[in-house]
Image (cartoon, rainbow, N blue to C red; front, side, top):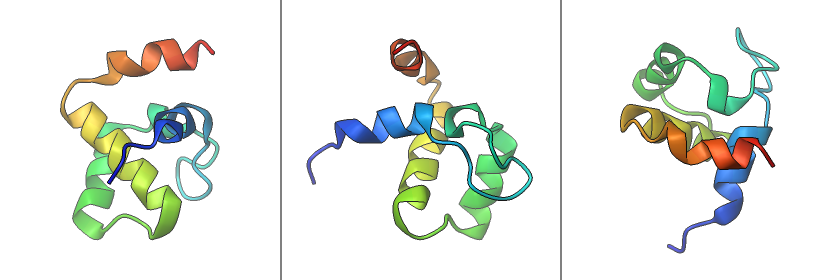
Amino acid sequence: MNPDPQLLLDVVKMPMPFGKYKGTLLCNLPVAYLEWFQRKGFPAGRLGVLLQTIYEIKLNGLEYLLEPLKKR
């Protein structure tokens, strides 16, 4: 599978479409919320992929990689 450069851009620009954190940018979701999805199952489709991506980024301490994208 080829990496999708749009993935990281979407993570810093897309708001959560539902739930407790509706309207919060995906990159700003708390780790505890992402961990809950990890346990319960990420949603299907693009949103699930984006949530899994930000979960892995935060889990591995790679949030600094998103800083240049946030400034765009």
